[in-house]
Image (cartoon, rainbow over all chains, first blue to last red; front, top):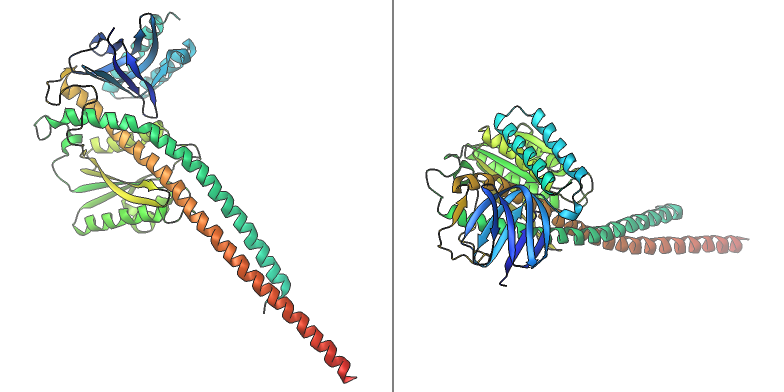
Length: 133
Length: 295
């Protein structure tokens, strides 16, 4: 099957780079799966899991917390601010993140920010559920 | 004239100093390698960010809906200078050359009758600029501890800059840091942060033709609005990384020449020591001989 270049870059280092068959992205407007030859799209990402399919039945999952995906016919680039390979994620670490977000929410007076953080908390909880912890 | 003991003491102390400078040079060399690696691995992110932003902003610049971070506030009355230096000294002209660039810039702006505000990052820059610009310094941050630069710290700085921008405290922001060219060459640089300077028409890495109509989710404006603050953080982060490498490179050079100078000093002092010793022996001999002759 045809493949395309997938790059996943974090601010401090490149986290993934290679040829893949498909990538499933948690876009803000909904989950989407990208196959080779996709029309150019620029989308922002919410908190969620990126599923990378390198070959049939073989791939990788990456937890991403917001960012952007630049999608084109021959490649996809994800620009993430914070991310971790699924192996490094534990229920405890997600709980810690939820708690941190809640603390931040309770500390801020800004309504817009509160709403953003609320959304983030829900997304984190959803992620936790999808990962079957 | 100094006694033999004084000379001996002086030589020992110079030798001790030489050992310290030698050690500092080697530590700086090791840290430099680490700083360079960090700068290297952060590059793809900055490049991708720039190319996405370049494509995105190309059709928006000058438009009515362009965000303020991109187009500016429309005036340039108040300038914010973000001066990034190190926390520590003993690294040659590193800190002072960044501070000098910032000072010249500030003086020129003030001569033009503009308001200048200064935000220092790093203890040394604050120490230097405080002498002349105490009332202008509105914020000062230290690079805490010895740990390598991390993204969180850059995000913190960017957040402070943004908060002040949103509050309308300044119109133009310029970042001062030292660009790392090589171990012997670091160039103090000024870079416009706000309004953002974007690379023109960067090539897309995803194979999309440059003039193709991109689709945006949720919308072009929304993406740009979140991308621009993040771009600011990336710029600050890059500056901090460049600074870290430059600082170590500069320190390496400074400590190398200090070690050499100490070596020269030891040679000179040893020569004086030997001459003095010989002169004293000769003097004593003369005294003995003339004493014997007088008998």
